[in-house]
Image (tube, rainbow, N blue to C red; front, side, top):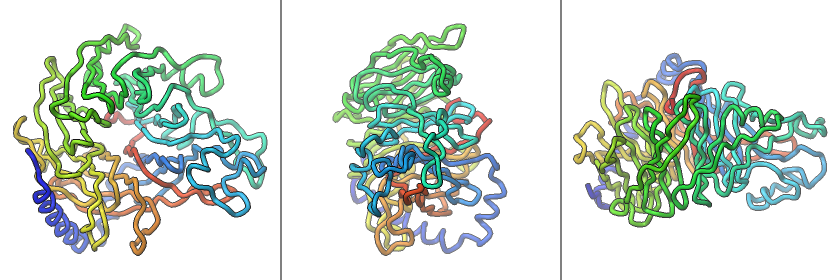
Length: 458
């Protein structure tokens, strides 16, 4: 399918009408009724690249429960260590280049472990990965701060795990024993032993890195097939996909081998595929071709043939994809970075494309879109029941809007996947540091986690 600008505007107008009707007709008890059905363990984690924080949202109330600090500010009372000095808050560039700053730079990728108990978060600019306890909502490896006091933080931030240039997206192996991290500034993947990583972060003299695996130039992400026997690697520098045999040994650790390199230049001639994900049934892998304004789908079985190539409209700029299948339908959602002026209430908003996945391979296309209620939609994730969808956004809300100046997350009821109902726009607020508030800004990845229950990476 090749959607032109006229078609995308048609979807825009339809979505605006649907969104307005939804807001007007949702019963007052809707949020409470939804909350009653949400598991008390559920949390939404969002990485914020410009503030180097991870926001935690409680989906029962759709409010920010806490913010996990990945900065090293306010660990010392002296000015070079403070976030706010003499009443002045620094710019982002100045913030991460302050003297003796040792915290995260450009918090970006995020993924839960198969059991949902761990979260891996990459620092693109600091070349490292942090592990977060999803139950305690704290960074693993933090130490008591020897300079702790009334005006300083109680903990000193962990240095995380140094892995290499531009770690873009981490992904746990299906058995949870390994963490594979694409090094976008290089041509290799760092493979970590998760058990050793936890010991290293807690002070043991061990190395978490099992090996560095050569792959495509500029690898963007790894995702595994359902069985955990194959790994697919996309790139943001070349129009190719590597297929690797994971080849796990008796101990469950990989012995990876290159199996095949796929030429995807017909779908992504510009060689910029930042995101990919396999479907819950494991039969397909979907790719986001951002500069081509399209997504494509291939079989995960031998041959890896192209099944669909779906255009998303002029300058759609897809970021992430997510799958929802329930009793009322099966769809692929794609978050669009483009911002349209004609959003709900006349407020600028991005959109999320809806692709009918129930159609036969080769015939699937974008059938509608809906406004994301935020600007430059990025991360997407659904709850285990496939009835709720959360959307992260990169840009702040505009002046004169309800959450002006805030980065926001949006929540939708997707019990009818073809007609999502807007629930809430959630302002992400600030991280309260002793020297002043650090605004949570520029959300990238978003994951919905139920600790202790097998999730999408299992």
